[in-house]
Each structure stands twice: as structure tokens, then as C-alpha cells.
Image (cartoon, rainbow, N blue to C red; front, side):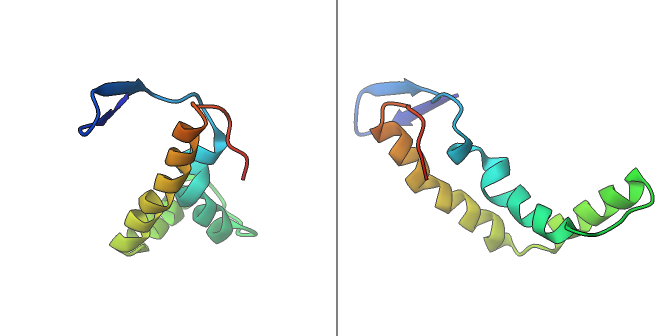
Length: 87
């Protein structure tokens, strides 16, 4: 993956892994973990059904806001030349 900035003639490689930038930890799965906390399931099918119900039940702006919240973190990583970003 490459980031392209049309106003500058440079292409940056994907930054190294940073837990601050991991989408799954950052927004989507954070809310899913809270939703599933202390629930008990009899089998994998019940878990999958509950996860799909949770994902489908979210408003469209839930996903959009999660992506928008990532932008400042990506900028912080770029400003630090890809180094790990502390919260």
C-alpha cells in the first residue's frame, strides 16, 4: 500500500505496524469486544450470528467516523517518520 499526496511529488511506503494505527484494534473491534463482553455462546455459529448482527446494526456513520478518527493518527505517524506513536 502506498500513500499518494497529489500536491507533492512523492509516494510514501506503508508505515510500519503500529497498534495506534491498527483499524481492527482502533474502532471496529473495540466496540465489538464491549458488545460481546460477558455473553456466553453455545457454539461458533451463535458467535458468528451475534457478530454479524452487531456489524449490520451499526449506522453507516459509525464506520465513517471510525475512519475519520484514524486520520490524525496516520498524520502523527507520518510526522514521526513512521516511528511508533504513543497515545
